[in-house]
Length: 178
Image (cartoon, rainbow, N blue to C red; front, side, top):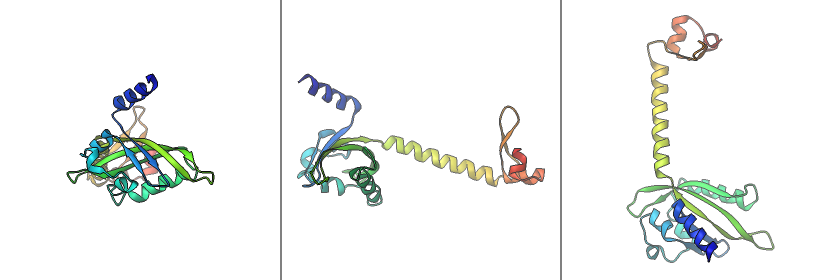
């Protein structure tokens, strides 16, 4: 009972949903937190089968999920780990990180029982998307500026020179960096 309570505290403390999958039958057990991530109650998702999960995965993400499962099922990765989008009840897409591991195998080496966690990483993905957009914007400004721009270290060594700087100094990128 003490160990069970410890595990409940860990799951609640990490704010993750949990899942257990009977791989050969497709039966799936989800918890309330898993369902809450997509705006549902458990009763709205019944009956629980692997189709419950698969039907909510963004179509563009399914091949990546499938590859991650296959890598784990064939022993190429010790754990299943994959980021994907799930359709929320309101129609939006929620980014999640699923992690799991097969805990029981058949005698013929097929996965039987797999369990894991699911964490909402939507905020992290939004920050990464904004960062990529900012980097792309900076790169565009750097590359297309009419002014010569050098990025240098405190010792004066040049890390990067934009095309305008190369034209201004009459030197190639490599020559300026030396």
